Figure 1 (cartoon, rainbow, N blue to C red):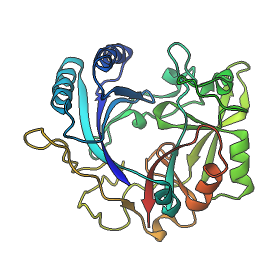
Figure 2: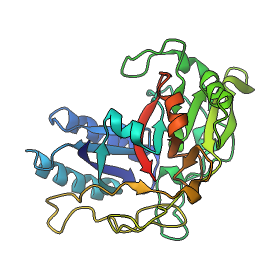
Figure 3: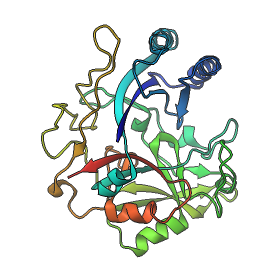
Figure 4: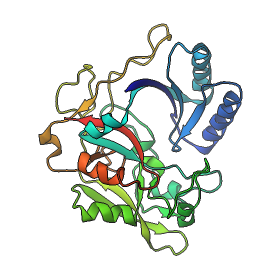
Length: 303
């Protein structure tokens, strides 16, 4: 396991004009710097830095401060663990996301603006991000994209099985869902999506969520961080130090009690139960071990 630091740039008032300006600034920066600013699932722009003493770290800091003030963004710094194979096999739960298939002018979801409301701050702590957008209608998807190569040129024989959707949601194929159901994986919450070609419920893809959310650790967090009991946000993240010269250390592993999760094999760390999906080890071995197309691993949860 190694440690990677990220700086996330999140629009405080997300709109198309802000995203166009931010993408333009990112393109300019990326042409001349080795630490690139990458878009993450239409939610944020992110720097990833393996060593905070990198030669251009000071320049990154100046760039972040500039776009914060110019574009109305908020920067959040965090460190995360880069897990190896054994870390994942030893985990109690593994976060699973999907491949990003969106491309300019051709998104997977055609009605995101209508299906998702504007994100609203948590009523208890005030935290707000793109995951906080309430979904009020089924997603209308372009199924043809599920058979195409992704924007990086990677192809998927038989189509993509796991695809990132707006607002941190997750699309899964019929064959992946069938495997989970055949194994009686507990805790699945399955929603229909609509096929754009017919306007009817898709027979090949489904939106996956969890029937249970786990927002706070089950025991005192080893880092002494505190969490919002309403949305799960970390309340005392230190961010940049007083001089802005270094980033805070990695958060302690998120640990839950057996009582919290019960018999569930799919849980969410988000109050919507539709984002930040974590699969228990048995379910993880089905989703990842059987090599479905597009499965992306993230953080882990331990007991």
